[in-house]
Image 1 (cartoon, rainbow, N blue to C red):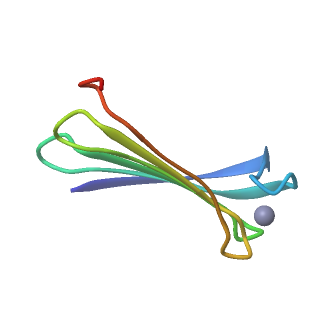
Image 2 (image 1 turned 90 degrees about the vertical axis):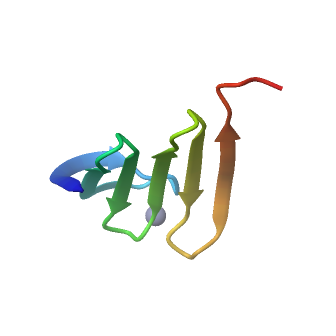
Image 3 (image 1 turned 90 degrees about the horizontal axis):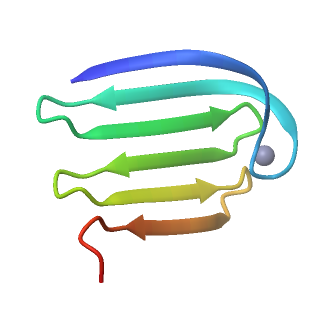
Length: 77
Ligand SMILES: [Zn+2]
């Protein structure tokens, strides 16, 4: 598993604030990708790609409230 982590500055968090934060991306041996944005205010955005090609995206506000949770399937309905 490889984890790449980078700092970012002045990005708009899900709550609307402009804030700094950290972006991290991890990749396992089979190519599964997990992508996370952690804002300094506490907001969090994550995106996971699964082996079957589906993608899950979650946005959580700094107070812990789930703002959006989406699963996108490559296979269609
Ligand atoms: Zn926030």
